[in-house]
Length: 152
Image (cartoon, rainbow, N blue to C red; front, top):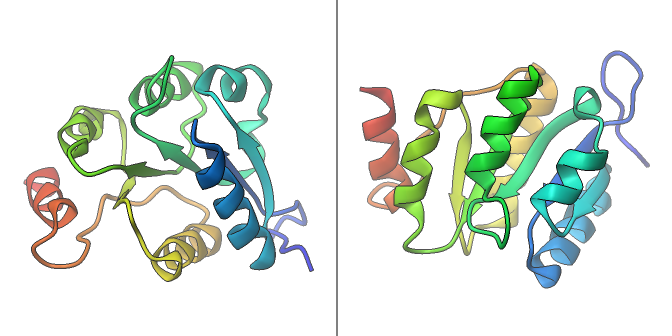
C-alpha cells in the first residue's frame, strides 16, 4: 500500500546514487515500507527529470561520478526548490559534507547505515513536511562529531 501525504499526493522519495546495488536496496526497502520511489543513477539525470515539489525527501549520495551530492544541493537551492536531503556517504567522505552547511539543513548517514535509522528519518520528514537540521548520529561516530560542528 502506497503512503500518501496530507495533501493526498503520493509520498515520493527520490534516491540518487551511482551504485546500482545501493539504489536497488533502497528502492526495495522504501517500497516495502509503503513509499513511492524514483531512483536515478546520476545527479544529472535527477536534475533533468524530477519534480521536486512532490518529494518527501531526497536520499543523496555525496560522492558520485559527475556532479556530486553537494552540487545537487547547490543546484536545488539555486532553482528555489530546496528539498529535504538525507546525505549518505562512505567512510572518509564526511569532510565533504561540511561544505553543505551553508546551503540548508540536512541529515547525514554514514555507510553502512541501518535501514531502521533511514526509515526513522524519512518518517520524521514525512510527518513534518519540512527540512530538518543535521542531527547527532550514534555517539562517537563521524556524524556525531560533524553535528557538533554544524550547530555551533
